Image (cartoon, rainbow, N blue to C red; front, side, top):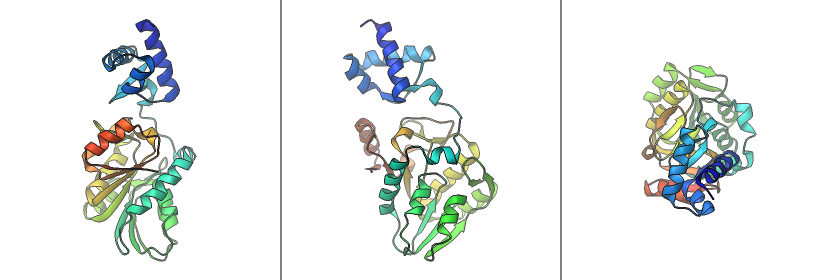
Length: 255
């Protein structure tokens, strides 16, 4: 296969799968990883793919486009349900405190919370607050601020001030994108500021994200990879990426 033919095939494969690693491409096309990296560099220059740490993804995938809650709610719902169930293992002991970031995976954690759990819960999410308000054992604290319609999350100076005074046992954090190099990122700067403050307020940070978020980079970074303690994701996480995260001291749980 000529280089041009291989590069065209790689571009088609990346477009179909959404994210492909250098190692996968090397094995599929029976070439060295150095050859794959040269191919990806050429395709990146042509604007056909976007190189990311360890592989490539479609050029259109790295944008500031942010899907609304309703659109995201039905995306990979089964995987998110399993991730949320596995994340329950990281709840603090009875009477402890937990912070719930806004998101369609974190809201599932709240939905599966044992009815008899005694917990101090803090959230900036309107949907999560609605769910937790009916739990008799939960002392709920809803962060104030401007509510973003697209995520139903309170953001802004009021939320940041409140988070600056908090210290919780565990924070369950969602993310739009995660790579070892760029860390955790999201499209909106106000949302990123609140997530950054949430990470800083917690003794333990548990990130809940399905595998399609891993390997992506978004506009605004809110945490370095070393800022998180646990990643709960689904079984489609690439083994090479899992090894990279584990080497950084992150506990990786696949649901």
